[in-house]
Length: 308
Image 1: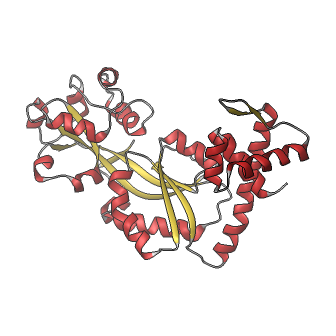
Image 2: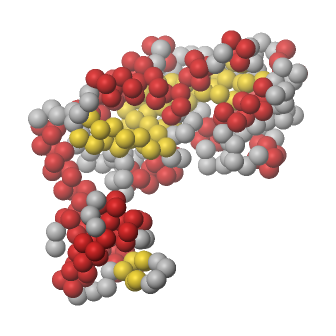
Image 3: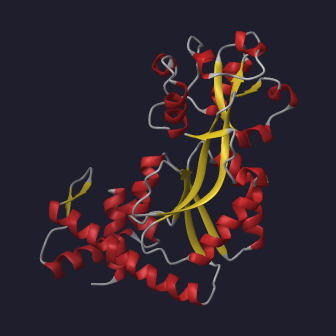
C-alpha cells in the first residue's frame, strides 16, 4: 500500500470516473486502474463497483477512502511541518471564501500577495458557509475566509475586519428620500435578497425582522448581489451590500446607497483554520495582508455598530 494508491482511490471516489480521476492525478487511466486493482488485491476486498456508466465505492470502500483521506492529510502535515520549521512561504495553499466576500476583498490583497510571494501557490475556492466548514473538516481546504457566527469549534478563528451592511435603494422608491434606513422602514418594501443558506441574507433577515424575505426568494431564487444591484438600478426595490462593495461603485451608484441607522448591522470576517493546522507562517501572512488591505477603522467594532 502506497500514498500514491491512497491518492488514487480518494480522487476516484470524488470524481466517480476513472478517466477524470487519472487526469486529476496526472497519470494515465490504465495506470490508475491497475494501481487501484492492486490495492484491492492486497486488501482482499472490492473498493469500487464498476459498470459501463458509473464507478461507485462499496460501503467498505467508502470507509477505506475516508481513512485514506486522513492518512494523506497526515502525510501532507509532515511536509508542511518541515516547511514551517524552515519558515517557507511556498507550496500550494487552498483558501475557501464566501461568494459575498470574494469579489470585494480578493482584489484588495490577492494580486499583490501573489506578486510578492511567487513561490506560494495560493488557490481560491468560493463556497457557502456550510460547505466551507465541511471542506475544512475533510481537509480539502487549508483555511477559509467567512463570517464569524459564534461557534467555530474545533477550528481556530483569526479576526480580520468588521464590515457594515448598507442598503441600496432604487431612485423611485420611497426610501430614497431617507438619509438613513431604520429596520422598521423595510417592513413593506420589495426586497431583493439572496437565497436561504447565505449567511449574508440570514443575518439581515434576523436583524431587520424581514417578513418580506420569503416573498423575495419566491420572485428570484438564484440571484447574486450584483444581479440585485442591477434590478435596483433599473428602478425596482431595495437590496443590501457589504461595506467593501462601496469602493467599487461609481458616483452614480453611490447615490443609491443609504446607511442604516444606529445600531448599524455589522458582520465580523474571520480566517478559519482546522484543528492540527501547522502552516502558521502562511496563516500569519494572510491575516496581515488582509487586514492591511482594508481601512484601519474596520479593524475594530465601534459603539455605533451591532454584530449580527
